[in-house]
Length: 273
Ligand SMILES: C[S@@+](CC[C@H](N)C(=O)[O-])C[C@H]1O[C@@H](n2cnc3c(N)ncnc32)[C@H](O)[C@@H]1O
Image 1: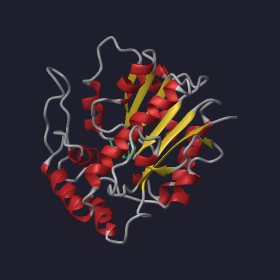
Image 2 (image 1 turned 45 degrees about the vertical axis):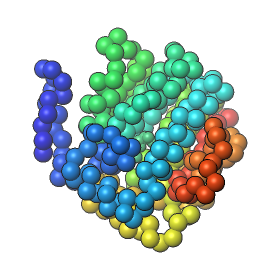
Image 3 (image 1 turned 180 degrees about the vertical axis):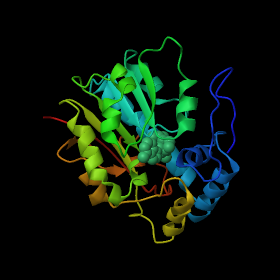
Image 4 (image 1 turned 60 degrees about the vertical axis):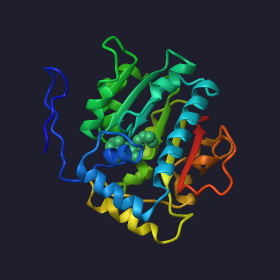
């Protein structure tokens, strides 16, 4: 354990450096500095087994940018519940959304204390439109009932639920379908689900070595096939082009010829009724 201060005079943050954390490995893949030796070693093992991972996480982030712009600009949503926020990486969700609609309210939820601590430093003292909440996706009712979430999210108005590169950290035994259904049930018509999810559909079995790296981390990696990822959208209506590999979801520019395939599906869907 290492215990840096959470800020001048702020609470001491206990950081577990005994195991790799998905948020810190993701930060390392993105070229960030909020990671430790244990995360760097695990991330390097992952890169060895899946050399395209750095491009994959950037493509996932760019998908999230385009999807958030879509739900705010085209979908008219002004509230975002982002579960599995990750460590701050500019531009963050609230910055993307507020570039379109400055009044957009955002609740950030993550179960890693380092994410909450760093995310809080992003917020101005007078920012009453953003909440940072330490909670676990596997207890969706606690997220929906959380007073800090309820301070910024009005569940009578449409909400964009972001589950971006998080659901593959939930095992089948933990009932990912039940978790997503509970969250979607709480949202009114006009709400959206923005989801991305790792897959090994497009790669060969060598990716097993990459997946195994997470066996020693605080959460395991559970890639799923396209049909299984589609299940999570339930009866929501997928917007064009449907569930596709993230670089193919409404790209801003044409993909480079011969670009490495990226094993992450992404989709955006609207709740109509
Ligand atoms: C790969 S990062 C994705 C970050 C961001 N959503 C993005 O796509 O750029 C996954 C995040 O999910 C968080 N996470 C993993 N399992 C979680 C759980 N059960 N509850 C809440 N957060 C979780 C991790 O701490 C990490 O910050």
